[in-house]
Structure formats: structure tokens, C-alpha cells
Amino acid sequence: MNKKQLVAKISSTLGQSKADAERTFDSITTIILNALKNDETVKIAGFGTYKVAKRKARVGRNPRTGESIQIAASQKVKFLPAKSLKEMFNR
Image 1 (cartoon, rainbow, N blue to C red):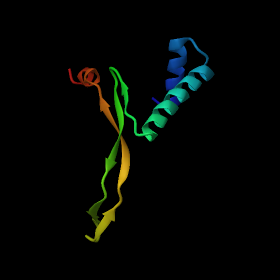
Image 2 (image 1 turned 180 degrees about the horizontal axis):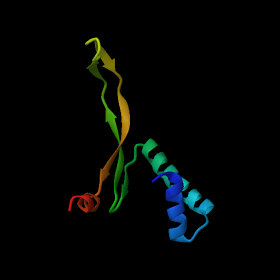
Image 3 (image 1 turned 45 degrees about the vertical axis):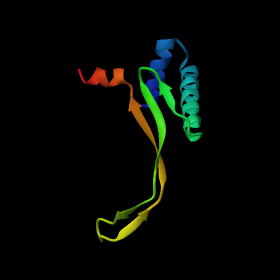
Image 4 (image 1 turned 60 degrees about the vertical axis):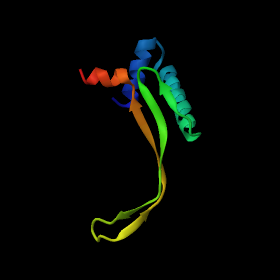
């Protein structure tokens, strides 16, 4: 499902226009992204948790040449599904 299809579902479920549903969707994603940028954890009960994971700098190896290379520290977003979400798929 892409954004357009998701907005259409929200629109029909809430009885809103597609424009209102898209503004609602965009607001929610902006709020989540801003929270993650500020190193906050976003917990949605029954769905899961979004959080920023920090990776330390490390030494890696170029698979073609075998040469050691320095990999810079980085950040990534992790999603941890809620217990109820996991159970839904593992019955």
C-alpha cells in the first residue's frame, strides 16, 4: 500500500475529503519525524515503537580488495513491533 492508497482508506474510514485525510496523514508523519529528530522515542500502543539507534564508528573490509576501511558513526530508525502485532502474524 502506498501513500495515495493509505490516504484514500483514511478518507473513507473517517468520512473526510481526501485533502483533509492527506493533511491528517502528513501531520502525523511530521510529528513522528520531528520527535525522532529530537532523539525521542515514539510509542504507539498496540502497534509498536519507533526509536533512533546510534551506531558507533567501526572498521570494515572492502569485499573486493580486502582492504580495511573506516566506517563512520551513523544513526538509523528502528521499529520494534508491539507484542499484539507480533502475535497477529505468528498464530
